[in-house]
Length: 230
Image (cartoon, helix red, strand yellow):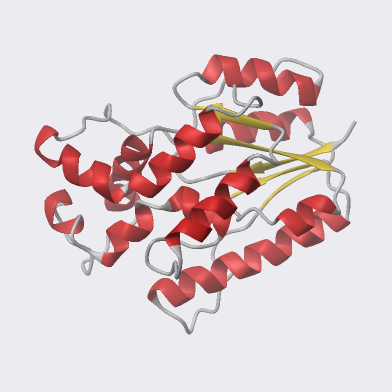
């Protein structure tokens, strides 16, 4: 059986499904550690340093033939091509994912430098970064660093087409059933890292959030149209 790499985009249910997968491959599994970047850096530079270190860690795990790897890491088509792993991921409505990400940061990682209301946060560069996590994980650039959006979107779409399975958090059971093809056994549907209250999209901010997440919406819709979408 081939190995599996689970690309976990933040706030897309990956904590739950990643944990279930690692239970299945208990004797050969790993996650990608966080906070591997240069501590002397700050802001976007620190994030890019962190992800570069995670990318390198993923390459080492694949070289060791670790059967199941899950984590917040960018997709690398060259690494995929020389591995014996199937790549899978789980996506979510981009506007809902963005709002969930913002509320998670406010709840778990409060920062006095961050705008303290959602309305004010939407006008920040950090909001543009959070709003383009699909672009970042599948093309390597968020809206804050992207020199050519059309090219980055094309790259991300081509990369998503290389995945063996792409789920939608709106259909968790369909994704769990599709994963059985890679695990050989049913997976439990776990509930990890859930928000304490249901997500409510502010109606007065919906249009602005939709505009911010427009690039990720293109990728989400393209992924859902692929034959390997669950």
